[in-house]
Length: 134
Image 1 (cartoon, rainbow, N blue to C red):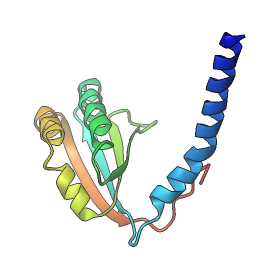
Image 2 (image 1 turned 30 degrees about the horizontal axis):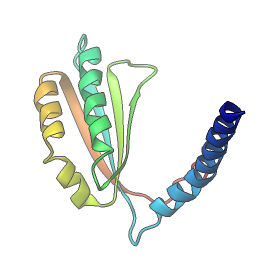
Image 3 (image 1 turned 180 degrees about the horizontal axis):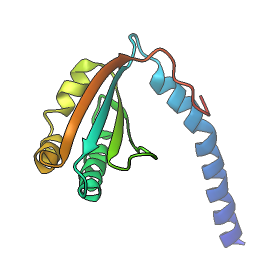
């Protein structure tokens, strides 16, 4: 009996959490100005993609714990596996500047400096973000 109550309680808590997550995410997206997008195209030196992605994933995982970082997505081209797209969402440009001062970013930059053949960064202001649960 006690075991079934504990399981029912856990299921209920999971359902409440699932119901509240979209509201929390929606509330987190509301702010006074547009979000700052940093979109970076990277061409990785052939033979270095696995090492590069390992360093980038470590940087991205740490980045989303920074106060001004909302999202840090990494994608690899289906046509050219040495081409990577980084899509970062920050509260503002100052949050991106703060990100670039972190130890984890400096480690990523030092680790990957000889792995990058070409880098093209572009700044955007977010107009709309359409996601499920929002």
